Length: 111
Image (tube, rainbow, N blue to C red; front, top):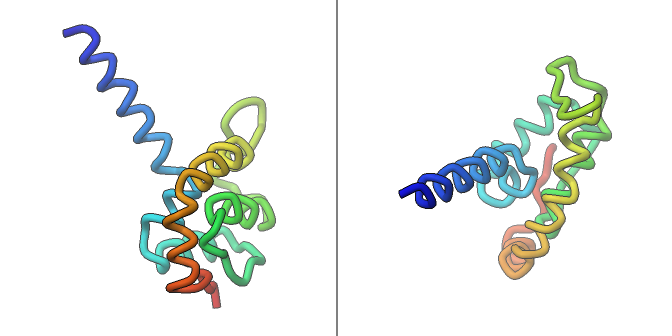
């Protein structure tokens, strides 16, 4: 019983972490949600390619002006900097899917 509850706790933690992941935002949500998010952060990006879209999304967030929401994780390091390597790993695992989506749908345009 104890190991089952520990597994559920770990899975729940992973799910909560992935909810803010750039890869999840760009690969599994509608394009309109990604566009809204990037426009809300006032990024200067014009488009986001679907291949390694999570990393690109995070770099676009970093390229925008600093936000006042306080998205800081530890020691004044923005959460986005921590998410870049995590998104890189997830983007690599999703390459077959994102290559297909890039060829079928093209990049996510912000205009």
